[in-house]
Image (cartoon, rainbow, N blue to C red; front, side, top):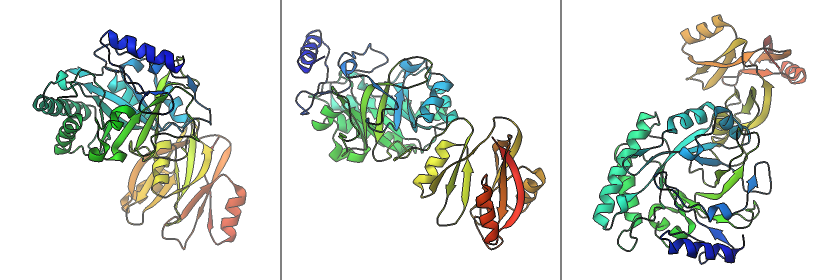
Length: 415
């Protein structure tokens, strides 16, 4: 649909009492803010649905760091969230609540699916303000809604470090009488009073430009700006980079999903969702990621893509997929030395129990052993940390032995 047609559509919708946010005055190129996405009132998606369909795997698009889901995505399965993670999505932003009376009925399932897929979980609340006509009412409603949001987050097991997002887009509030930014501050103050201090603010780019949601007050990097381009978004022409994140489309289709339905997608410029930035680490089922700490000399191995990404954020170097582990088989235990900051991996219960008695922390089963590919273990008697190395490469093993490491044989097997 051409821009002229979109503006005619917006005018027609307005005539029926529906306010749509368009990009005709705020941006040089054609674009649209999100329309009303309330779960309680049938949202008008006409403008958003007129932006182009885009598809995962297209490297010309902006990086996809996050998707946001609500009851509309009740169709999604565990396999769908696994696919999102495999395709590089770090964060699932789950709608918990709206107003003072609505709970997303599938939020618990969506949170669990995302966590099981090793995705970072953030949460959002749709601010209603009970169609406030005065600032006093708006502020009071903001506090009530914040309490509703906190209650849900706590009930679903989302701790105080969770990124909590305030969705500001309701058109039922008289903006001539209510300062949205002031109400948003009251909302954030209430969250902070009970320990939830990682607060972000979602709004359409036009609302932000007009200072309805004022980044000068709330912080530019705390803003998640929504702007859907009428033309295909491009990785070489990123928008809204002055903010923390940009929701650039509501029309992305991911490969290998249980249903062919589009999702909202965002690029996280400043890691405001907590899932990391930059090229994502991901792999197929059973992938064991290998990382290296240049400060301590330790190698680290994990099946959790989320854990691997968090380590990269902390300064570890990603060295690729070390091997593929089976879903079942002999358990490989992981232990941590809190004094030296070192990890150790073993399939032998006696080694595990002896280290626990010596003060190591047992961190559980890291992966399983099985297959025909041996994992060689070597020990450096001179190192205080990073004393053990595990590799499928006979060449790497032999080089370590030549450098003075001790051969400790085959630790376990991979596929």
